[in-house]
Length: 438
Image 1 (cartoon, one colour):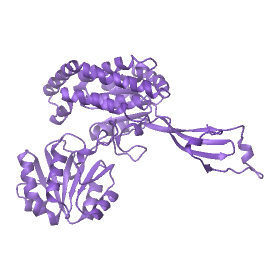
Image 2 (cartoon, helix red, strand yellow):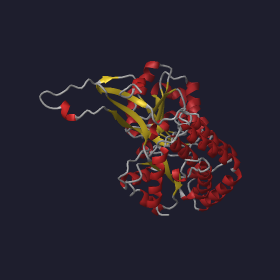
Image 3 (spheres, helix red, strand yellow):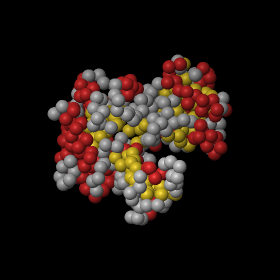
Image 4 (tube, one colour):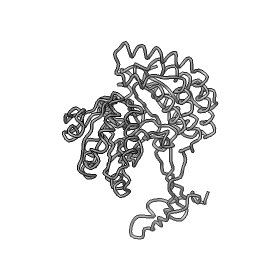
């Protein structure tokens, strides 16, 4: 089956999913979670083949870390799907009701986007995350993972499709997968049947997607995340947060890549913090002031302030004040996630208001920027766009809305001309939706 046929089938499935009941969707999701748990050995066997391939191809360690699965991660996949089951169905929610005139009401109602094309690298656990979110939000999905994860992805997709096909009324083509780069190029041409592309990968990869399709693209190209230790910071708290932000999972897009330190705090916190980073084999580069405070740190070059390392490397810069920190982040950051560590609420609020990122935090690890941790169930990806969805994109980011107008024979001619009838434009309570209150 070629990509055009896959896209067309996905669109047909999306039209069914758009009005599928919550119970049926949840039933399918439950079976999908069960299938992963019951076939853990098959998933891990396929993953072992992928890891061997990745290592033989010299694929970067950061990508291999994202690729690797174990029993705990497989259980986590199933848990993620079940968390989506527990979430409220985002489809069919009445956002607003306006009485245009007597016996004429317009409602704004949430509805699925349609067909989602999800393109991602390395992470097989993205497959159940994306699939479950799309199904619950009434969208069909076409998945394309990296070649390094092709065995894992194929097994997982087959298990998910087999599970959802056991529920009458749920179309099998709700979840499909393509495998080659040529098919990606074909998919980017399918603007008639695919309604949103969600790429997850490198900066160059996302830019390629954006520049080669007419389909709207939702995603982020890089995760250049910052931590800022303010002069009013609790230093023990600062060390704890910074270590977690960098070390808990260095390959993650929400790992801290640049640390900013107020000049009044630098001599107090950097020697201890640098020592702890060095114990964990973190390569450290810094500005001239940083190198003077902690000579073990190597000099940074200008390019370091714009890099997403996805590895055990960190850039450190000493700043004069909060204003310089905010200006630096807004210039060099990617709009992903940034944190201030301070005990001064006013400083914190200023940071949260002025830093132009999808997630801004006060006294917490950047690693919390995640759909599951935010209570979204899971995430299809993290968006740094300024469109309808930003930050971790869960169910709410996978619905759009339509307008439903309920009339009783009205025509526009009655509201035009010299003796035109006036609109009332009276907001109404949602429970009074519809012309007759139904």
